Length: 210
Length: 210
Image 1 (cartoon, helix red, strand yellow):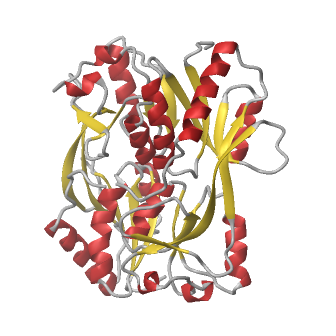
Image 2 (cartoon, each protein chain N blue to C red):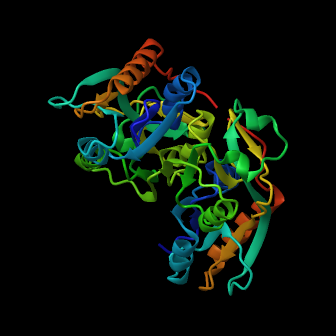
């Protein structure tokens, strides 16, 4: 387990697969013999595992006041995801009240779930729940299929899904690395440094893709 | 809840999002005002919900001896998913023993999980587990990133992932609709008939796509 070529990475469930792929692929190719262990979970699950010394680094949301060393990668708003063939998708910005009669998809592991519920309730909007899922990529595909709309971090993209800001819905998140406070050996430290340096040098690009 | 334009569909967690999208999108467009409620789960979770009369139809695995009416859609083998840049991806068929030193990704909701574990154990192969996930699309993206290989239903496709048969690994599944034994009203029955007819007329195509 003390192998210097072992990267134990925590990944937040609500970061797009494509983003994680774009971060891991170059490093996996650069480091011959690298083994990457992934642990996916919520912010709290990742923090707990880090406190236990079972992951070296986490790709997650950065919050003020953390005791760990952090490396910011990007800032990302939350926004509406709606089928591209839906009439509202033609608008530049959408009001929550326009969604009152639209079916909605709930992303059950979303860190902004309670703020989002409150936002709609504050506007007297109670959209009909048609699908509840822990899988963000699946939520996105069901938006494309016309099953319903959802709200999600803006970097989730898919053909057939239009992303639009929603009036008054001003949430955003900062995503980056959190480092373990457990001391790492010299070779592991060097490995982590190379990973962080490579990722910062070419941050995952957020353009749409297949 | 008795709305004639309400389709309550159970979907097996291990069916690709893209397949579900290709099945739902045409019907959603054909039926103005249709509301589709989705319930995703394991075979057993879907069967339970159907027995309770809470879903009308399920897109899932068909097994011999079911008491419900079924409609077969396609037959699908399980196969290996490996990074396209991996040397083994150049082979036509791969032996399990060649994977002995390769890190593996476990799809925790796979219905063939125990058979697959037994298959590797029977060949004295115990690949190193690097990632365990309930999200098949994420497993696929991590295969593309070079994190490890996995086994999965053959219709899961992604750029950067090569699908290959594995010697002696001859599992397959039959996917289709299971209908509820609870009686549906006339309009609901007609809606379900139109959905099944449309899906059979244009079965989801399984070619690679973005």
